[in-house]
Image (tube, rainbow, N blue to C red; front, side, top):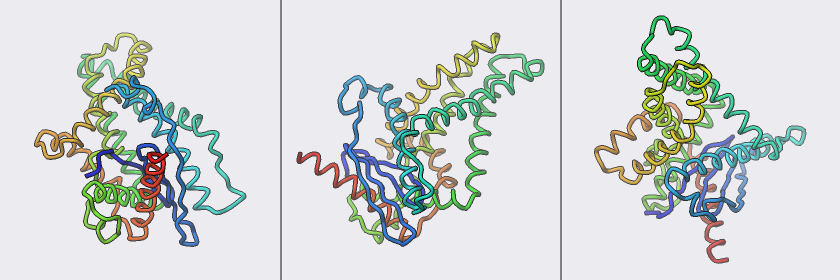
Length: 293
């Protein structure tokens, strides 16, 4: 079994895999040829012991995953489109991530709070209002994921998501990187980013339940400040769950995330699995070259 926890994400007609020191990308071009790309990772996790500390590393990994993911998404779109008149430039990746995070915080943190604050006269107890706020946040999250899963283009991305998980499963079990060996594995994986987001929502319900609501501005500020600690705790729980998959308690903890992946993954075709294999091969090749260097 692999010592390093390789993982990735689906992009437009492709898959990104993050290795120890290398990002691997593979995209199926309109011609049918698989485009391959890799680049070294320049991460604080490689240089700083502080960045690798528990409850710190989760925040670093989350930020890096967002920035790298957006950059690779832009590259995959350019490759898949093969149209010189349509180019997405990578220089705006950080700005795009910041804007996306701001929208997500407004939708999944601000909106549930304001909605429950509006019915303060009906639900006067702060603890009860916070629990209701958390339930609304969960409903928004599940509703959003379910809604986008109905879009044909998103369903293709979800199929590549399944191919990525199946390929990682096979690699972690020492299988050869061949479609015939990979096809027997499930599309759900305990370290999935979707499972992480679900866990963030659950942990936030617990953490926010004890907050006061007397001052709306202070209450919103407290929720925004707690987002990072909540994400850090969720990351550590997910790591523990993935490391101890055989534990009954851990199975209970990761089960909701695996269940949610019935929506966010689809059974891929063999050509999609071939793309996932190519992405992992690029990450592995890059890691091998850098170890030799």
